[in-house]
Image (cartoon, rainbow, N blue to C red; front, side):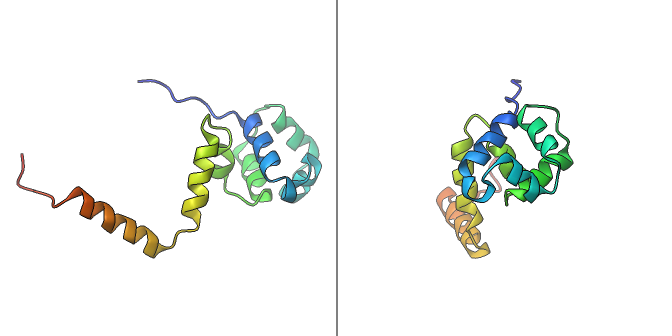
Length: 114
């Protein structure tokens, strides 16, 4: 079984800063929003081993979840971010409708089939 590629935290942080420049403005400003020392943010941008707590605070400062922040470091981050943004706006009714549509497309289930 192939090991999935690791998320590049430094790349993720740089991409978040780039894509959310209006909110974050700079690394120093982001540190203030995250309520953590600027040196901690700068260390994270250098690729230092950041704690989950630090990454969570950075995500919250950016107005996103930790999963969303980490998605920016995946090789196909643009696709993942687009998908997350699409589904974020969905209501329960939208999800239920998709489930019903998929169930109809898959056809009736034959529970007696072997």
